[in-house]
Image (cartoon, rainbow, N blue to C red; front, side, top):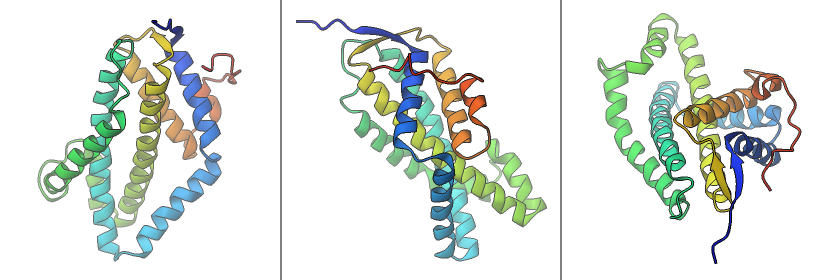
Length: 213
């Protein structure tokens, strides 16, 4: 017997996601304290030069992972209302995606930080030439931001795989992936204290009426 799915749209999905994150993540102040403590522990167990290289390599890895994640999000949304399940191998796919990106990171790192291929890292590399302390601050900021974005993106993948079992997701068009990613980027910035809650919610408080149950 075919189960008739309820209808939802992208905004319902994002409201549900926001509720999920609020219920499962610590307050922004605690979140920032936790992630800063992890970074400080990393710094203490490494030589200064080793620490810088570690941050550089991790930023390359996390940047490339975000690019692959965006492509995966587009694929998932294009199939979200298909009858064949998209959630069976999501966890496995994410593990494989991370492994593939990690395998390519050493070569990418050499090209970017040891060779001519700066690309999207050009501004970061310019700061390395100008001020060593400023460069380390930029590395730390990028590492923390990209780590947070990675967590939030993977949370969204898992939520989407659950929600699509019971809901037909309406208004999935070519603009949907960028709209979702913008929301995740704002959420990451909110948890890191770069913007306030009004900027995430568009100035309106969430009522909870469009949270999927």
